[in-house]
Length: 83
Image 1 (cartoon, rainbow, N blue to C red):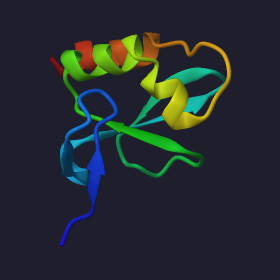
Image 2 (tube, rainbow, N blue to C red; image 1 turned 120 degrees about the horizontal axis):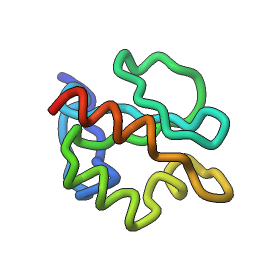
Image 3 (spheres, rainbow, N blue to C red; image 1 turned 135 degrees about the horizontal axis):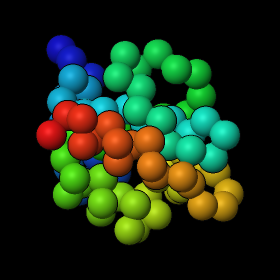
Image 4 (spheres, one colour; image 1 turned 30 degrees about the vertical axis):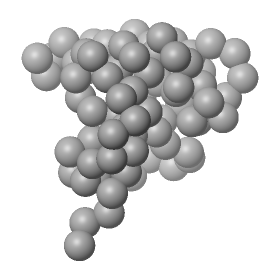
């Protein structure tokens, strides 16, 4: 049985394979497509709706337990390439 994770954007539970893991590297959000980068990760659907909701609600900051704002440019570029 595949592990289940919760999307930080919409708060819906989904299989791990349906979500994108995101980590904070030097206060920048970095997509972790292989889910192998070290450190704390947050899971989100790869949709602009969920990513925007997570950014707006500061869910990435809370889930990754970082202080201060995060640079979201990398994750937004990732979504544009996928879409």
